[in-house]
Image (cartoon, rainbow, N blue to C red):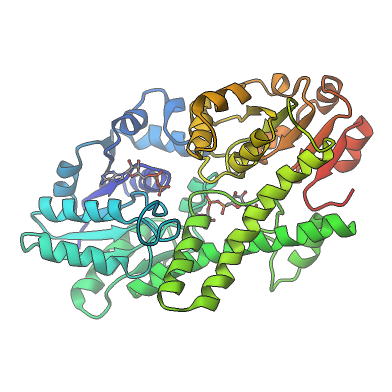
Length: 466
Ligand code: UDX
Ligand code: ADP
């Protein structure tokens, strides 16, 4: 099966970078990324590459190379579906905010709308690929809709979960640890569809890294990978609290355990908590699935990862309040970072949001600097919590684009994201301009305690006893 044209529905953090890399690696295939959000598509088409809707190291350079050649961004969804041999569904699957499964199950309404649209428009055979992370057995729902609402057109459904991490998306896409393709191996049509997708990745990924499984294994592998990764962060964060009480240092503990090849050294950085669009959503999803099968112990086990993460965010803000003599009312607290991790402008589930909300409840004046996140996004994140009115949020939280002004006259500084540039700031100058004692709360463990203390900071690092 020769694939000449690919369509991707959803021009977000997954669809955008993934299709950009496919277009670059497969110059003979026309790749069209469509979205219903006109302004997002306009941003993808902006001549000024600084205006791309997503910041990812290396992304703009590839977009510049292939956009208008074999990579196109458009809002003409029907046209792109009709043209394509292969359709990736890469729309958002947020946690349900209403009805049954509220706060836990994945909301599949966007996926279902896509499936219905594909069925309505398609006139020729298509391979439909679920790229978004989905609950196990979603593929069968998609197949059901396609088979029952189309005009007799044949569809093959594949699951091809994306494992890229934001901030390193391009590197992850170019050199993936593995590519996972789940499909129906029980018949020749299913096998052909799997092979067509294998061939696309084989343009740049070694064949031994391309795994093929049945659909359910593929869907569940994605949830499992994210659950294991999030669990690792919650595990080290749980140890960070013990370290603070006992005088151990969590970075030394991480190094010591990480050298055990069975444990491995990656993903052992204690932090103010994990964020991002996937971890919490996927674990809640897993918990919901377990509960729906009556597997209550399994559900409780995974839920604890989320409970620990919430605790980590809350205890970070509690520590700030306690340390500043039990009140931050009217005090200026400077935030370095708002994104959920460095090298991205994504703020979904960022721990900074909860920490800010807690401090605003204590009547602090929060001033935020982030190298890539826009002011509008920061207010949107805070307003979406509904804790106070947008006017009140604006009154007590300020966003500045100069880090030094952000920290001037602050009673305390909180580091929420591990951006590299924070390490290189002129910390002596910052100390001089702060209120004394100059409190510094390092939620990412990026600064050197001895140096900071020598400069006169009252320095608190996550996972390190004072
Ligand atoms: C994650 C998965 O890594 C990726 O495979 C999947 O496709 C999507 O979800 P992402 O959320 O983009 O990717 O970033 P990741 O690097 O996994 O970080 C998630 C969160 O955990 C961030 O808030 C990060 O700061 C935090 N984290 C990560 C830690 O606190 N400590 C660590 O050691 C690692
Ligand atoms: P992810 O991180 O999974 O990529 P995003 O929220 O960044 O999630 O992107 C998902 C994109 O999918 C959004 O830009 C949204 O507008 C788009 N989208 C959702 N539903 C549809 C649809 N039915 N047709 C086209 N685009 C859609």
